[in-house]
Amino acid sequence: MASSISFPEYPTHKPLKSALRRSSVQLSTSPRSNGFPTNDSRISLSSSLDSSKAPKSNSSRKTVKTKSKNKKKDFQSFYLNQTLSDPLNGLLDVTADPVLNMKFSQDGSYLATASKGGIIRIWQLSPDSYTLDELFVTKPIQEFTSHKAAVLDLSWSKNNFLLSSSMDKTVRLWHVERSECLCIFQHYDIVTCVEFHPKDDRFFLSGSIDAKLRIWNIPGQRVHVWNKISDTHMITAAGFTKDGAKVCAGSAMGAFFVYSATTLELEHEITLGTDRKVTGIEHSPTHPSMVLVSSNDSMIRLVNCDNQKSICNFKGSVNTKMQISASFSDDGKYVVCGSEDRRVYIWKTMAEFYHQESTDDSVTDTETSSVKTDATEPMTKKQLKEIAKRQKEIAKQEKKAEKARKKEEKQLIKKLAKNEPESFEAHKDTVISAVMAPMKTRQLLAVDGVVMITADETGCIRIWTCTSTSDSDQSSSSEKSS
Image (tube, rainbow, N blue to C red; front, side, top):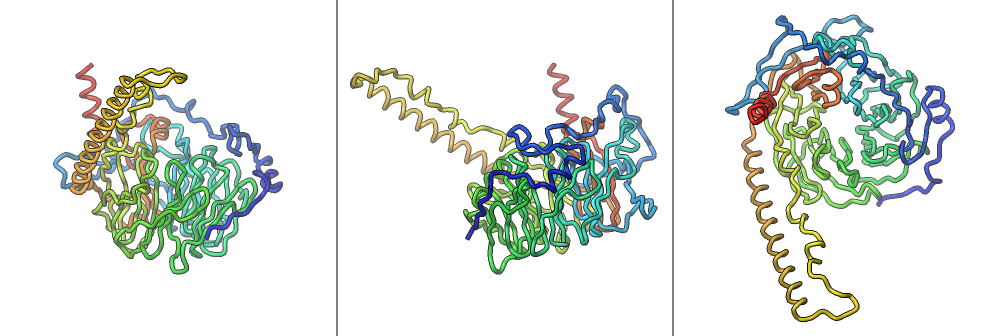
């Protein structure tokens, strides 16, 4: 049963407030800033980047061709642009500290990496990235070392605050401008997952091995609401839906639960058809209720939390024992995932289907009110007949639109069932994490196509680039039409 804790409306804790003041970042609880700094703390790179300079080619770069059973590939080959190394031990290719998670900041300027050794590193885009030789500064601009055990998950706010969850039973709050931890949120057990609320980043979600989901109030440094999912299930992954209306949680036994984000009351349980551990949950960037669920049966499922259906499965990658989690590209067109066979896998999602607005919703009240009447006088038989006729036509249109939508969805599911991934060998060891850089990062780097970041269990972080053939085809076709 969910338990709610009452407290004064968004109090500001003095130690947290003073720490933020020392970091030259003012804490505000105005609606505009959502309780976070109103000033943009991002380090501007636009002045350092000259987008008019064309990227220099480098024939000596390592090129890896992709493999796929598809007749037409979106990605022909990936080019290795850079390998990030650890300046502390001086190793060229690896840090000897497995990278467990990677997340780009929402403004695209930073990449945060979390390691098994408990270190969080913040990597900044290179001001000379137009050469395409080094897309990131070779040394991290921050190294957060306060965690006493492995860091399992990361989450960025809109203003470059960073949350980290760890096996040391804490969630910690950081900012890219400060080297020290701003706030510690203590738990009773290992914290496997953490995420800022997508609509109000004064709050965040945490899930832990003690089977408890908690939504925290950051300014108040206290639990806002919590719920225990079960006495037998341990939470191994959790996250919000894109609209922030629901919370999804996965367990070590393959269970998948959906809760109200307001009260954390259980709404329903969705059967995934597996008893293997859920290793990751990520919301769709294009659909309010779709989430991507990774698990240790080597399956990645696209789940609709509204109709409680598993839309499709993405197969091909190997994930039987590691905490490997799939992720979306920021436009929702691709799913990318690391694998125990040292490869990175990429699937099409056919996200254009979910962008379509249902035609039945376009029938508004303005159409039904086409028959004007005087509210003070009773309607004539003719007017009543016209209204009844119009309502019948609208119902017929709605029925037709629903039938067409179901048919299209059925065709989409068939296509997705035959959807074969494209893959390439990215490392010599298990690829634990793989993410596509968002559009904002590519714009700052003045790079066309895809930028892929991969990390393996030895700690090696690699930066790859690739020009999408589908994008090239679209641009060429648009040029012809113009």
